[in-house]
Image 1: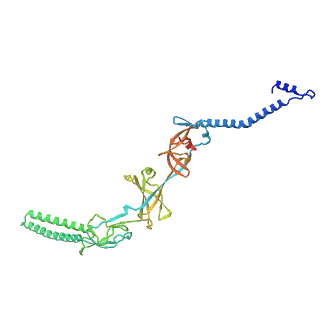
Image 2 (image 1 turned 135 degrees about the horizontal axis):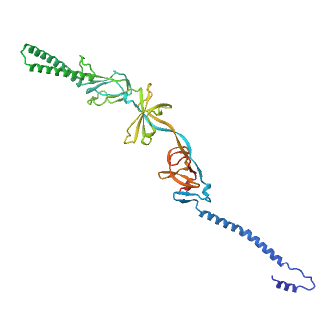
Image 3 (image 1 turned 30 degrees about the horizontal axis):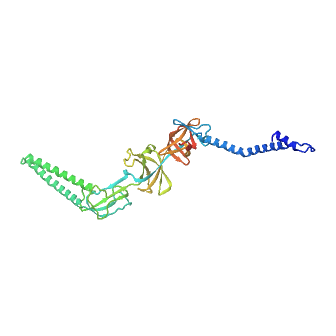
Length: 402
């Protein structure tokens, strides 16, 4: 109420009663104060929420990082700074060990293929696959027409030598008496020389077959004997088989006192292997025993179909415990090499490329492709791509991967 209204009210009061001061202003003041309090209690939280919402919108609009060329810049106000971890790679001496499957092979310099000296039919076989034989032991008996022909040839040659020798002697005697022509004596000498040469050829043929040239007993049966001592690792004949190819081996005998372990090294790992290198070999038959040897031979030729290189390790095998065609695992050991090691969390895989983020300045990063040497647990050894002293993002790198 205003002042005029108050005065009108006072005029209506009885005259005999004393005047009292109006309380309306006090009520109005109290109402105003209550209204202000209610406004603060009700509207202040809404205003604060609106301010917070605007702040969040401002932060959402602000970029987490920016790109300048190939570099990614994380600003000081970016929340990424609390989510990224940057550290230098550690340097570790890594023992280089290459494990490859391998097989046992007979030493070729101690392996002999037994060829049939004549054609014919095998009537007896006195050797078996995997068995051991000694030099001179009978392996098989062959009934051969070629052997009979060889005996016949040597008899003919002996008879021809005897006959031509007599003819030559007669011509020499006639020449001395003056009753023969010189050309007849020369013809007799030529015939005799040819007969002697044929006899020598026939004797050589018998010796090649394995029969002494002066043997009197003649037979169609030929005994094939072992040329060396060893084990029969391959057998291609059986009793009753007919041998008509003198270049086809009947069997193979190998001396297994020394064997080869052969591994095929992939082309990318050829530089890892060298002659004289230490190799630890574990055989499937003896998993708890490690055989230590050295690389004897590295082939100079990479096989075109498999792109692999043959490497051989020689082992003494006096007890014959290592047998051809056994499987093994060959671990080639080389001097350790220093490698930079980073956690696997630092790696980013994109298609066929592996990369990391390298810090090139304070909170500025550059993506760089790396080549991995190998992985061990939660760490990887980096062959190339980063240098000692450089820092890489080891945690949260995926947040920079745009």
